[in-house]
Image (cartoon, rainbow, N blue to C red; front, top):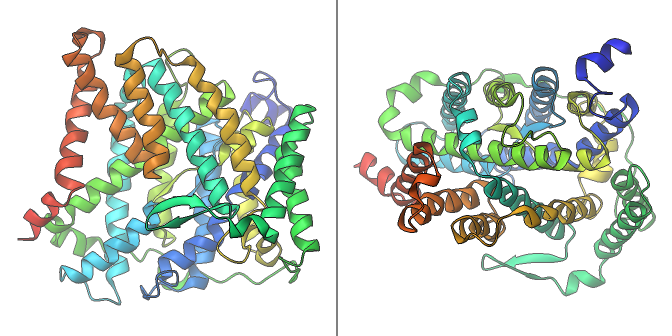
Length: 463
């Protein structure tokens, strides 16, 4: 145990082995929904159009990819951040599959192999950026106000996810509105039970308030008959044809058509990871002034996890903001991430039991939703650190906070702020307050938003 304490610097960061283990379990429980959602999305079951990817094999692939990424992050960077296939990237992955068929690049049965090749190349680019320290330069160039805005914006974002998973809000024509019918449902009762228990225990300074809230929510769901006990151990399926199924030859043969998708995947992963690392590091106290120690190792772990995930038949593997629930429990070291990784390994064999908390019926999950709302409220404390008196800092920061939640995308919200930041500094007579990298980032992202995001670039390439 002494070796474990020294390796992860547990006592140095004011934690304990027990706390780290329970923090890792808490993070896993909060993000375990991906085990069930990812196969539905990638197989096409959610959209009603088959992609040719077998759902059973995808379940095993999710667990293996998440386990590898989380353990690598813990061992390499010593961060309490777990990884898994990212939400948002998985939907875009399915869109790329459809595009490969529409552009005549692949047959419908094999298009997923080409899409995996696209993800693999984006992960390789990601790794190069990490090794060359470009991402660390990006991190250092961000002002304190912008970093705190990222943490606050992500807090609102995960709270919105919590309200959505709790069944309190739903989408109508793309807009989120209060689900009045849902307020009188079993899901609502489960959600508020978990929320009140978690918040009350937090007020009483009881360790593990988030985990206890999840367990109470699960118990309430079981008593109301919303979840069923269907056993403990299940035989895992192999990854079969998904393993190392990417078609790199076809990607390079059609690189002129697939380049926009590679760029988009890279941008999504860069900004999702950057936002998550800064948000969780700020919450856990790992930020040292304007620096994030071991950031290069963290970035490398994330990019390697993406490349490994492709071998498991998965879309982009990225750092999960749900790791903040484990941090709130007290997790401060990589042992928490390693624990989460081992939970994913175990999950391969205990899928029926995990389904009680991760596979709530009706497309919602009020069992884990309160944890996201509580952590979102805690992360909002960062807004007090923003320099609201300086409009050149306040406006871009506000655009990040509002943009992340309004667009329901961490990467899109960050891009809005990073484009506005250098422009306001420049035209506000404060051009020398920031470095050249801020202008390069702003200009690149502006080009991306105008040309790639609008489809102009893709239309030009396809003609």
